[in-house]
Image (tube, rainbow, N blue to C red; front, top):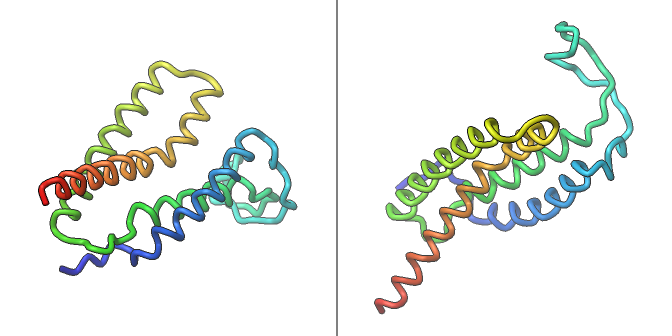
Length: 153
């Protein structure tokens, strides 16, 4: 079958390498260690504070951290397995549905019980949450299936 929405399987390895790098970078950014390390540059803002399209000066540290982390998680999430078949596609679909439901439940719970600046940290981390939940669920179920299949042989 044609699974055109999946990346080639090599993207999984690339994604894990990028994930390790950007995880460290994100921790350093969120703890303030690398805040302002990059020089300010002029960028186009489509939603500035005053509501008009403007050119503004900004440090790109946070953008690099977030985009890099999301790309790495996209590569891991949508990398084709070496043996992709109907079972794994079905498992992907079920894992994604589980991840989205879990994401919704976690965000609702966080909104009801976490306040102030900590809530903002949760919202930033929630950018990655659906990917984490999918990766954990998909690869856990895949490993469980492979273990059961190897015991049957």
